[in-house]
Length: 67
Image (cartoon, rainbow, N blue to C red; front, side, top):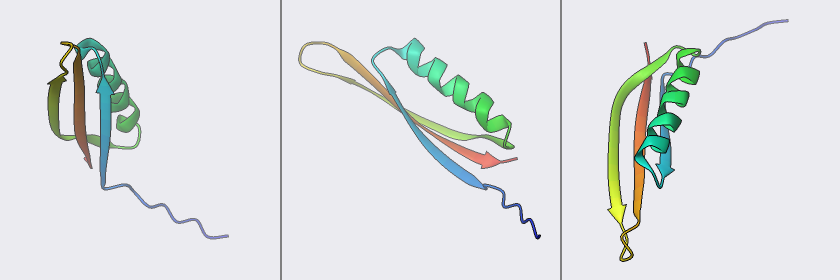
């Protein structure tokens, strides 16, 4: 029996929420999960959109890289 372990080098994840604090909590939870597989945050990109009713919508893209 032969085991081979492959490590993830890069991972990009997308997040969305209607509240900024909720978005932050989602990202923080994923950062903790990815620490377990030795991935750290390489970059973060985010945007905010407001529709014609004034409702805000937040999105973020987080690029994780192996430490």
